[in-house]
Image 1 (tube, each protein chain N blue to C red):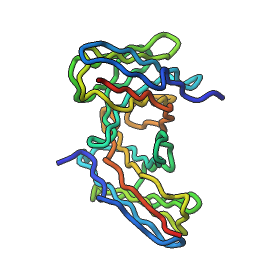
Image 2 (tube, chains in turn red, yellow; image 1 turned 135 degrees about the vertical axis):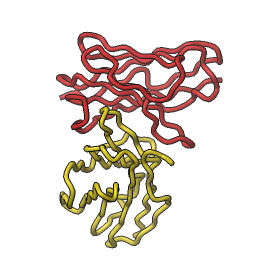
Image 3 (tube, one colour; image 1 turned 180 degrees about the horizontal axis):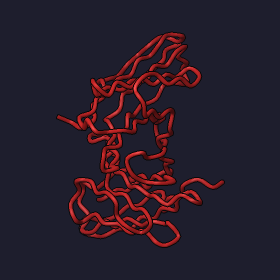
Length: 115
Length: 110
């Protein structure tokens, strides 16, 4: 069974640009969550999508957005990039969603560097 | 106050010892609790999850949950150098939102 696939693995962008990251969950998993990981802030929750609907959202500015397609694949977009957006972006897939959530399987992440 | 707090590290234990990792959370209604291990440069991977008060054992790992005290812990018995990693506590709140602690870095010395 294939794992969670994130593309690209590495990305270098310039301040002010925008970027789109992609995540393909494990087959049959309908929930995709996105996280930002930095040495100073740890693992921060961005948002979760389930069945093409955003179910939860973290405390990030509106520059961070996402969507989910009918095949459960998800994309995350960051507009007007800032230096502070440099981080490892992790995607996690789950079978379901909600309070009695199941374990999350993480992708290898996309390392974004903003210069 | 952070929503999920873990005991500050780094934590160092000798090989064969018991490593104890602690986590407290602020949302009393939280129901799902997870421990992940993250090796340097790698993604987090699940070690254990626990939903009910009490202990849950899996091999050398034991998760303990006390909802009244809003406290969850992970014990690693017979610690091995391969257990050296950062351990992340994750809590799912009533809305289904997951929050991770900042992690505790464990070093097991041979």
